[in-house]
Image (cartoon, rainbow, N blue to C red; front, side, top):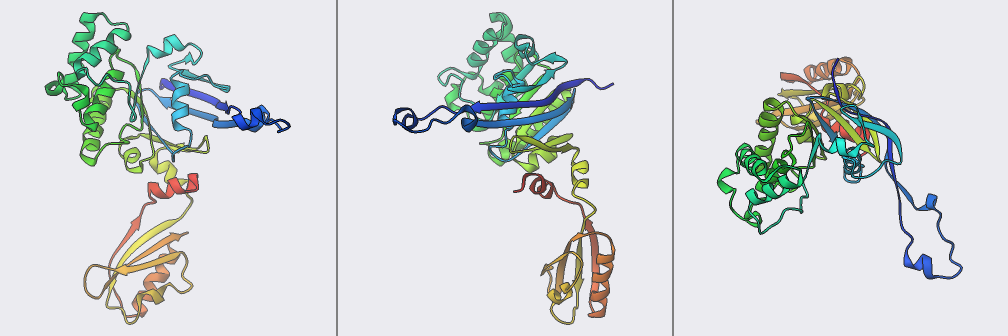
Length: 336
């Protein structure tokens, strides 16, 4: 039986907004109740993450991803529901913090005048390591995240990618079993993002078999790294599964790309009363067109399009069935 790294059931977090000065000082002004001032950030989330997998949590800004991470890291207390990390209840914060590490894409707690090495040694002691252990562990991690040649430079001179790799190194100081990565590529350029993705895949997943929960709003990042994906919106987990399972939930629709040429007349005229939606654009060569037929329930729509092409004197060069994209899945379950 697969071991569960994370398990939650109807986990929720509600915040009560404070009253403003105008409400407190104006005589006769009706004061809002707690119910009026409540904001639900996480609303009944039930999920499981298997040990050794990377679970990608997708969602737009404000979906509740970061609040969910803070709940699982025992940084805040849930309003209702329950959760556990490797079978340990979220109420046992001291035990859980020994098992987890967290790195954020908005990291501001390093000491900018200290070197990367001294930063890691300092935080290692805070994690309970002796000075000798912290020094040895810092050296190991600096090699692992490819920062050994920059170890003795002040942190303020690091690039965004180097700062992010040092943040992950700090999260690994106490050898956690579960790593939370909260939008780790938020401020990184494409080159730094690629290097970080390779580090996650090669060192953390393949090399150490670590369990990772990654929050992101980048669809390409989730598609590349995740074994399973959850989609959050409005504080709720709207859908979860493998990328193929999520695509299947869009329903029995299909899309096709058809390369044609030598048509007698305007290619756009083929779309009249055709099942699905037909988009027409130049095919890249003189006299050729790319026809994109979307949202077709079965192959009858494709057959009708091909029949019309032949009747119009067209020549068919290529037909390809297109898989539903993760963008379409995201749009369906977030309404964006």
